[in-house]
Image (cartoon, rainbow, N blue to C red; front, side):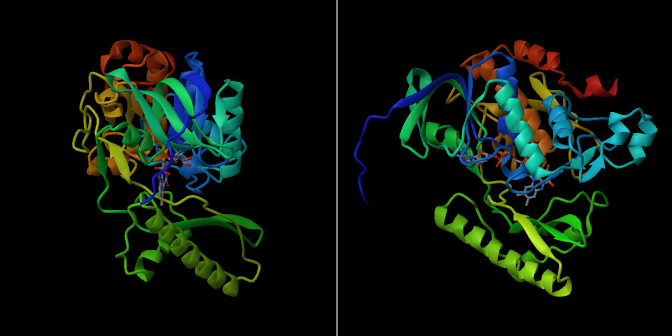
Length: 408
Ligand SMILES: Cc1cc2nc3c(=O)[nH]c(=O)nc-3n(C[C@H](O)[C@H](O)[C@H](O)COP(=O)(O)OP(=O)(O)OC[C@H]3O[C@@H](n4cnc5c(N)ncnc54)[C@H](O)[C@@H]3O)c2cc1C
């Protein structure tokens, strides 16, 4: 053991809303909070926005319709989908919904989804945040919290290229995917004990054609949206399907990354043997982790709550894996009474393991992000927040709160 010397830290910024993590959930939260008039700072460990969706090359915006002819998610989730394919889609399944078509046509056609270009999407998200006045702090790792009276976060400790320092805020959105702020602040947490399978996605060029190789674990809708690559998921076979990665330990994560790299290299070389013009053009640069650690909030939602009316709903969403009824997302899944000015968004919201697989995907992360950012701009005590005011703000921003609002 080594003891680090205590030292004073410079407070580099002071804001209303601090968003930690610039994945889809953090970006949605930042847009929502900035549009509510808050002074917003967003800290991101990497040097581009989008998290898994862009740097991880998870470039598939999974369906945001119920598969029965109804769009399931509204608000920023739709704005971000449109932004992701603004300069053209790699695969576009939006036309049935974004152009006039009957419910019957939508019911039998491909579900509302798209494959986007990660570079355009990351750069367009950054442009939008800059236009909204969001202060983006890249290369800035969240590594602690300083607490104040009432169990609230006073400041978040970060490390950037220059120094270990602090950012003071009235409220915080934890959109780190791994629930880091909640962990540092002492909020109750749950781990995903089954661990994550291995995946290493990359883009390649051959015959003048750019393609995404979803090598390893992928989220493919049964019978829909499949590419030929998604059929060939042999990493799991190669490593006997037994090695799982929890994703929170430094050494284990490094092993996960280097395992993925080495299988990916072998896969690339095999392809090059059969197609000499095969060239990899870009690879995922962050670990492809689905579920690691999450908040145990005021409420844990379960996948059995299909269609259940939630009086504190902050948005609707569907199950990407199957056609069927929708869900309503309770605001109680986004906060814990233990840390009243902290709200979570994205992969780390408070749900059961069964529900986690449904809420962790890009569209649902955008839904929880918009709700979290809007709430964060409205106050610093989420258990005491007047939810009807939050719901009114979300409705004004285009969100539909209840399944009945969509199905009527
Ligand atoms: C193999 C795989 C396949 C998938 N397939 C699909 C799919 O086809 N379609 C789909 O919709 N979803 C899919 N998903 C899920 C989806 O991509 C992610 O769950 C979603 O993008 C998560 O968004 P997020 O914003 O919650 O988290 P993330 O994208 O993880 O963003 C978190 C951000 O926080 C930053 N961060 C983390 N820790 C810190 C820190 N301490 N300080 C500062 N910044 C920090 C990270 O750099 C990152 O940018 C897949 C996931 C995996 C792993």
